[in-house]
Amino acid sequence: MSVSQGCAIPQARKAPSVDHLLDTPLPSLLAELHVELHLSSITDPGFIGALLELPDGSLVLSMPPGRPRLERDCVARAMLGRAVGVPMSELPEPYRLSDLAVL
Image (cartoon, rainbow, N blue to C red; front, side, top):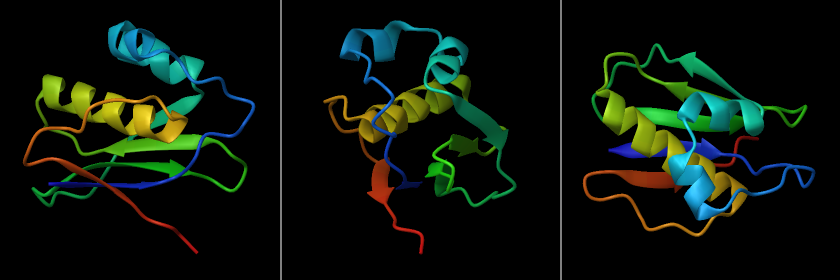
C-alpha cells in the first residue's frame, strides 16, 4: 500500500517530539499542526491517504473512509512525522510512504 505525500511543513511550524507526535490525540495533533482532515473519494485498496501542502502553505490530510481506526491513526501520524521531520521508524509492510512533487 502506498501513501502519497507531497509537502513540507513551513519553517514557522515547530516539529513536535516523537512522544508528543505518538501520544497526543490525533484531532489535537492535527489542530496544533494546522492540518485539515478530509475524506478521500479514492477507493482503491492500495491507497491509504495523502498529505498535501497547498500553495498557501496549509496542509490537508486526505484519507479514505471505511479504514480501521488504528490503521488511519498510525498512517496519519507517520505521514505527519515525516512531513515535519520527526525521526520515526518506517511503517511495517505492506505500507509505504512515497514522496511526490506536484508541479
